[in-house]
Each structure stands twice: as structure tokens, then as C-alpha cells.
Image (tube, rainbow, N blue to C red; front, side, top):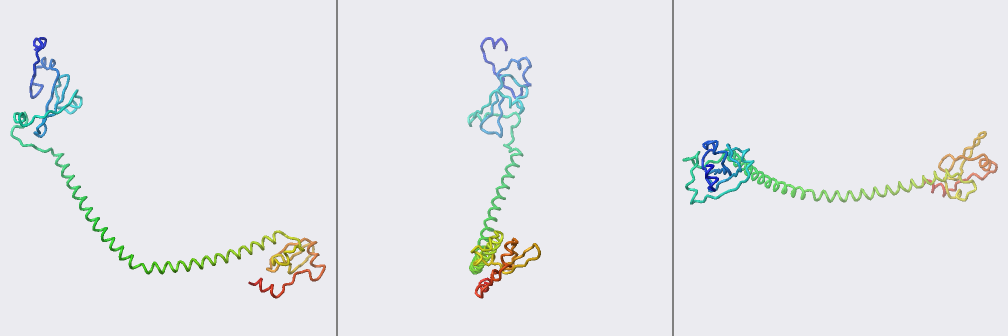
Length: 244
């Protein structure tokens, strides 16, 4: 074989197993083509190795192939193909593929069934919602009217409370300002109108129309006590305004 190779002749060794080739010849073989035909399909998967392999059918060896390609046998040549392992057996589907097809079929059936149930339930819920909506239309209208009335009452009460709070804050502000007794606002502002004065030793207490305590200096206290008539007296119409 070595002599023929040096002569420029190509020698092809075709075998069903590399173990049938003499070890000396096996080392000289190059390239090595491994052909497999799965499921008796009309095409073959070819793995090319630049160096001869003892176990070309191994998954690890096939993963290291230098090249891989498919060839189509066709009817003309496919009829002459004879497998070393299968001579009278029909095409068999692997068990894993069968299990995969079965699981896929079950998933498809379950999905279709779920969609049908979901569609029926959606239709039922939609009818129930329409009935419920029709029954509650009057209740919604009454509720809206009641809410509007309640809102108006709440706004009115809030406005009244706001005005009362503003008046109270103005009273406190004017009291804290401690305006002099002859300030002109005294005549029109009940919060600063001195209605009563009491002097006990070095302490002087004064009260306004609302009964709030007004702290006066001794000089201001003497101003109201030294002469009758300086303490403001309410007129009948003023009392009615204060009560309002």
C-alpha cells in the first residue's frame, strides 16, 4: 500500500468497522469518512476526519470532526444501501422522540381546553356584569345626588368654620399687639374694648368684650381707673352684633 501511494494511486478502504483494518494500514489511512444514515432516510450524514479514528461513531469523536456535510442518496442509489445493523427492520422512531410528541400533544389539548373554558367563563361573567350594571343604575344616580347635597353642606360648613377661625385669629392678634388704649380701633374692635379693670397691688387685670384677659401696664390701668367713663360700655345694638 505504501508503494502504491508513492506511485500516485488512491486506494479506498470501505469497511463497516475500522477494527477490521490492519493497524499498519489504519495508520496510513487519510482522510477518514464516517457515514451514518438515521431512520432509513434518503440522505446520509458524513463526518470527515483528517486522521483515521477507531470509534468514529462516538459522540465525542463526531464533535471533533474536521468537517461535516450531508449527501442525498436518492431513490436510484438509496435502494442499494444495506445497513450492517438493520436488514429486515422497519423504520423506528426513538423513544425520546415518541415521548416528546406525546407530551406536545397533551400540552396542545390542554391549551385548547383551557381556552374554551376561559371563553365560556368570560361570556358568563360579561352577562352577569351587564345584569348587575342594569340593577345598580338607579342606586348610582341616587348616590350621586346624595353626594352632591352632602358636598354642598360640607362646603358651607367649611366656609363658616373658616370665617369663625379668621375672626378668632384676629382677636388673638389684636390682643397680642397690645395697642395703646387710645388707639382708634378700640371703638370698633370688641377684642380690644376694655370692659372691666381690676387692680390689686402692683398687678392690673383687664377684660375685653369676650372675657379675654388683657394685660395692661400700671400706667394704662391708672388711665381707666382715674376717671369714670373711660371703660367702654356696650350699646344695645353692639351686644346683639357680638352675640351674632
